[in-house]
Amino acid sequence: MTAEEMKNYRVSDYRRILQKGDISPRELVKIFLERCSQWEPFINAFLHLDAERVLRQAEEMEKFPPADEELPQLFGIPVAVKDNICVSGIPTTCGSHILENYVSPYEATVVQRLRRAGAIIFGKTNLDQFAMGSSTESSVFGATRNPLDLSRVPGGSSGGSAAAVASLEVPLAIGSDTGGSVRQPAAFCGVVGVRPTYGRVSRYGVVSFASSLDQVGPLSRFVSDAALLAQVLSGEDPLDSTCAPYPPFSTSDIPSYEETRKMRLGIPREYFSSGVDRSISEEVASAVEKLAKEGFDVIEISLPHTDFALEAYYLVALAEASSNLARFDGVLYGKRAQGVKTLMEMYHRTRIEGFGNEVKRRIMLGTYALSSGYYDEFYLKGMKVRTLVRQDFEKAYEACDILLTPSSPCFPFKLGEKISDPYQMYLTDILTVPSAMAGLPSLSLNCANRDGLPVGLQVIAGPFREDRMFGLALFLEELLSVEPPIPAVPDVKEGDDE
Ligand code: GLN
Image (cartoon, rainbow, N blue to C red; front, top):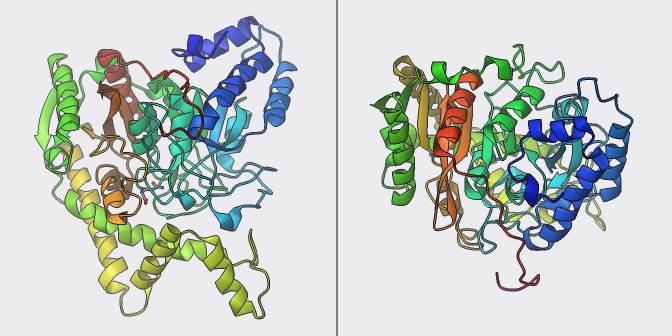
């Protein structure tokens, strides 16, 4: 069997063939390892991939129960993990020199949950340094490329996870989403990406970027798999006090198609404005029209503070980042500068040598926003705007159950196109940042392909209403029947211009 033959496999299909014994966990991971050896020279989605370790995990699975016993939910399924999430005994680099040689001594709660569900932790995926970026170009280990077009970026910061799923190096991956880093790369690579409600999923063992915004979320080829992964990942965690004491999300809460059809859909007009590529707005509008034809109640609404969300995000996120990244001082973790005479000099050199430019920029801006005399003017103001953004959503959900928008204002852009202009890069987040600021669950799925490039549609639900979000996304997936990507393995040699 080949990966291509499994392009339309859902987790339930892998389970079926594993359960029947048509394939062993070892044979299954070998197929994906083979796929990685074909694709990695072209896309660089993985920072760490240890075939031996993967095969050992698969062998463990083979000791597993007889065929008549119920297998755990993700039994034998390879899941790739973004490299800012700790997996015990292997590196967690965050794509940065400062953590280059850091090996995690413990495991993130989300990784433990994946293991408990029988998943095979397949490797660590590339990201923008410390998850700060929208293109996966700021990793010190080289950019990841979009498997749908190698001259383009896969989005970011979870670009490695999105590219790995889109090329079917793995069927599932996890990423982290602070302002869009799961949904935007999912949109750029034509796959499904989910940001759960803030507090749904534990952040324990996830390297903090902006603690009031960070959430771990699934990437997959099908909505049902993302929902299953969300179920596995979610739930209270005594090790993370910001993780809500609610029962985990359960796929059994997802409404049926009949119930879903009764949902009122809100279309926020600000998300279809001039900053959004015309073709993208058109494709999303056409998907909405199809839903209307199915009998959905569609209403136009307004989220008036949308335009201010991005500026506020870049104050709040950077302020929190400057504080979180203070721990990387050469004493506790990772790199320590050598040949220095004093402690101050050691701190100084370690951070100068260890952090990349974008990280330094954010630490400086964030520190400024928090400094005495400026706190009220910047950070506090950012937080006030955040409240207004959240209130916009609260008001909207009085009139509708779900919001539908484009996920990204632009198509995947060329490598190098925006990297030297941070503001242009930040603008790619305008449509994913507001729901992150409001802590809402949001999902991106591919609603169309234009000239071979995917168009992401974003489904945003009220807090802890993942059930509605997945219900509508499943309906849409079926209605639109846009197949997940299965790009052909490139035949150009590594280093060719493509
Ligand atoms: N691109 C956004 C940023 O640079 C979002 C990053 C993220 O969600 N991790 O901050």
